[in-house]
Image 1 (cartoon, rainbow, N blue to C red):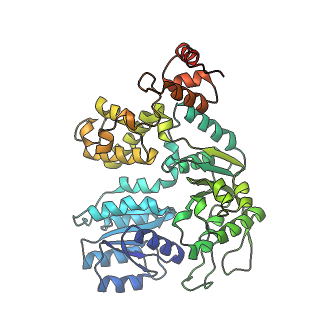
Image 2: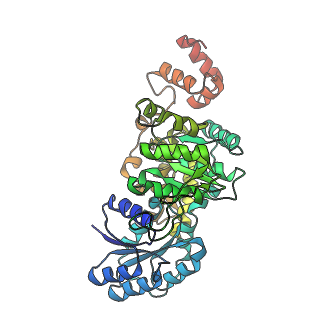
Image 3: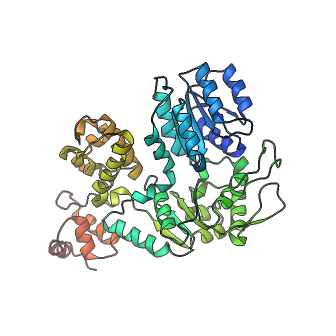
Amino acid sequence: MSKVLVVEDDVAFGTMLKTFLEKRDYKVSLVYSATDAFDKISKEKFDLVLTDVRLPDNDGHDILKDVKSKNPATQVIVMTSYAEISMAVQAMKEGAFDYVSKPFRPESILQTIENALETNEVAPVTTKKAKPAKKQKGILNENQDLVKGVSEASRRLNDYVELVAPTNMSVLITGESGTGKEQIAKSIHLQSKRHNAPFIAVDCGAIPKEIASSEFFGHIKGSFTGAINDKTGHFEAANGGTLFLDEIGNLTYELQVQLLRALQERRIKPVGSNTEVEVDIRVVTATNEDLSQAVKDGEFREDLYHRLNEFSIKVPALRERKEDLMLFANQFLNEANADLEKNVVGFTDEAIHAFRNYNWPGNLRELKNMVKRAVLLTRDELIPLKVLPHEIATATHSNNESDYGLFKNKNEEQLILDALEKTGGNKSKAARMLSIDRKTLYNKLKQYGIKL
């Protein structure tokens, strides 16, 4: 179990980060000042130190120097705001492994931490790592390279986004895990009248309930033990822009009440404060759960559900838009080349065939991770079948839930009925889904006595 020291003067954020990493089997120590960090480093040996670049009593540079002087093999990652990028770059020249720019979601730092822990070499005193750093800096700008897709499902999705984006309606985005719900939320924001204002993304499942109110609404210094500074909550940080709440179904009932009140009154009150703050935000939420069923089960407030669900968008699974598969794969290939400083040109025919046979239960997230892994392992210009994970390399059409190819399945009639149901009875779309022409479809309808 890797030992990690987190140095963060924002108590709520530090606690959230500690909880998040502990759930992923890291042994985490948390301190709120440079003084406490120096004390910890002198007594214990850590595999990795994650430190804010600015602290009340010192800064991350001195912590970095102290760590490297006592144990050069310990990796250091610095956390910084966008205004302090130059300080972070300087820290990397002094031996830091990388830096991450705030605000960020905990998931976004996992890969950086794993990469740091896998690096056994002692970081040199001077190093050029600006390129990986830019990757972290662009966390909130990934949507600029969003591939829209050409499938019927993707076109319908894009139409919905373009329709609702210019409005101020609250949007509920549903879909399986890994389908890119946050990217859709960013697309809505960037196409809205609020595009020049902040886009703040919050993972509701990663916030400990003890500090949830502080995270959303902020707190004032001294309002509770450990509140050594004022804190701006997500609502106020998103003022004028868009607040994206991912996995909204994970909110506690108490926080659901507070959230409903904030949305109704457009005012929030930081923890420990007697003064209300006016906020002007648009709320976009996402979930991979059935919120309507949660309402029926009494686990989610019905009034909050209707306020969040003024307009709903369902993001299709990757298996439902196979025409887009290689568009996404090539986009992820370009990103992986840039991240890993490689120049892989494309995929072999065998690899593409395996891609098309696989069902992609992890959707776009699984595809992106797999492509990056394949780029790392590939030594030639084209990604070969042998570097793909076993379950993808050996996939057959029988694994594909959306294989609508006729004459390969005994239950042709059911395949046709399924396609017609999914397309709302549109025979042209159903024919495209079945990979046949309209004449063949009409003949099959007549053969099976299917009447529309």
